[in-house]
Each structure stands twice: as C-alpha cells, then as structure tokens.
Length: 152
Image 1 (cartoon, rainbow, N blue to C red):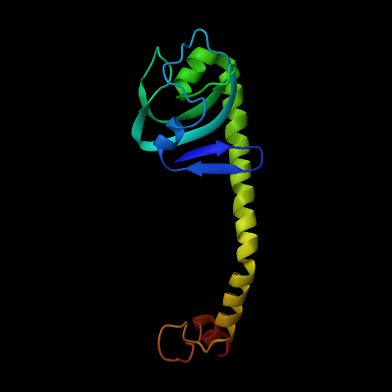
Image 2 (cartoon, rainbow, N blue to C red):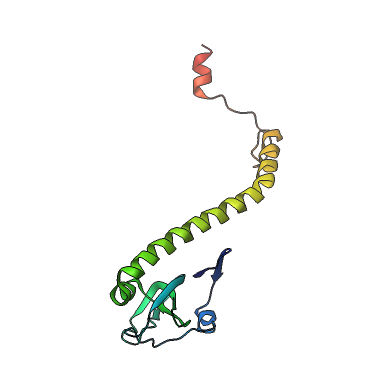
C-alpha cells in the first residue's frame, strides 16, 4: 500500500505500477548530486521494491517516496535516506510519519462521525428487541448470580 500525503488529504494507491507512472518518477538517481526537497509518501509491500538510488538498488518492502529539489521523484528506504541524506532525511521522516498518523486518525474520526446515526439506530433496535440477541426464539434472561444472592 502506498500513502501519498497531499495538502488536503491522504491518497492511497494499491499498485507500484501507478507510482512508476507518476509525473517525474525516476529510478537510478545519483545520490551524490541529488538534493532532498521533501518526503511525499510512504509504502509497504510484501514484495520487495528496488531502491531508486543508482548506488544502491537494494530491494526493500518498506520505504518512502521523496521529491528532489529538481522536481524528480524516487523511492528510497529508511537506511538509504539516512545514509545519503543524513539528518535532513531523518527529521523529514519523523515529521512525515507523525503528520500521516495524525491525518489517518482524523480520517477515522470523520468516518466514525458519519457512521454514528447508523450505530445509534442499531443500539436502539437492540435495546428495544425482545431478549434473544437476534439469535433465535425469545428466552427469558437468566438472573445473574449476584442478583440471586442479594435477594436471599
């Protein structure tokens, strides 16, 4: 799964082929000449993807999509990011991961808010239904053992 961070929301992409078709996406980046501008996405796959740096090409299952100062985009793993782009990458990675988690949480809350009327209606229906839990014929509730002992 690939997660791209746009200014307004997170965009999820399922296939690596969609990344390869992105405007500006380039493999075989010269890490010596490249200047990191920003991290624009992250990815995690069970199949490994080769690093976009010409000096590496190490396959990895998890990494980041980065935009370079010249506008090109490539993919790198965390180790290459740290090795070739140093502290700058680490700081960007920490911020990117934190902001992505915050956006995911906000999206989850918005989704839950939209589901609340349906959830509340389901709770009302369950409360008003005869005690059967919707699992067959109506049965009388069995008293809880505390209730039985308290009445004695």
